[in-house]
Image (cartoon, rainbow, N blue to C red):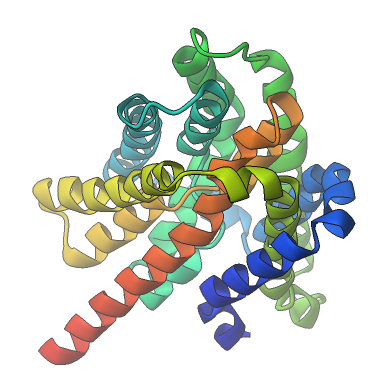
Length: 304
C-alpha cells in the first residue's frame, strides 16, 4: 500500500495519458465527480478521530500560522498569477478555486515521506477542511466577483454536503468502531488514492480538446502557484523560528491543495475548462511534493 502511495505521481501520469486516449468512454462519467469526491472525503474521515479535533487547540500558534498562510498565500497567489500570465476568465476561475481550497488529502502522506510532523499535518488538513465550508466560497466570491459570476451560497451548501458531512461521518465511525473495523479502515487510504486517480481520468477526458490546444502558459501558472505555496509555507514558518520539521509540514500543507474539490466545483458552477487548472494541479503537486520529500530525506540521511 505504501509503495502504491509513493508512486502516486507515476500512476497519475499514466492515468492521464490513458484518459486522454479514452475520452469517449470517460467524459460521460462527469456526474460521478461529486459523489466520488465525497467518497475521498469519507476516506479521509476514516483516518481521523475526535481527538484530532481537540489537537487543533493544543498548538494554536502554529495552526493559526499555517491556516493563515493556507488561506492568504494560495488564493492571493492564484489571482496574481492569473493576472501575470493573462489567463482567460475560465482558467482564472479554475486557478482561484484551487487557491481557495483546503489542504490536499495527499499532504499527510507527503509530510510523512518528508520527515515532517504527521500529527500536525493531519490537524492542519482537518482545520482547513472544516473551515473551507465558509472560506472557499467567500474567498472565491471576493476574488472572482469582477471576473465571472460566483454562486457562493450554492457553493457553500455543496461543500457542506460533499466535504464536511462525509469527513464527519467517517470520523464518527472510526472513533466509535475503530477496533471492529481495523482491517477495513486500513483500505481507505488506498481506496481514496484510487478514487482520486479516477477523478483525474474523468477531468482529463473532459478537457481533451482544451489540453490539446492549451499553451504551456497554464502549466507554468499551475507550477508557479504550487511552488509559491511550498516556498512561502516553509520560508515564513522558519522566519517565525519554528523548527525544521514544522517548516516542512507547513510548506506541504500550504502548497498541496484539495484540487479534487476545486475540480468538482469548477465543473458544477463554471465549465470543464475551469477544471483544467485543478486537474493539472492534481498531478503536479504530487510530483513536486514527492521530489521535495525526497530531497529533504536525502539531506537528513547525509546529516545522519
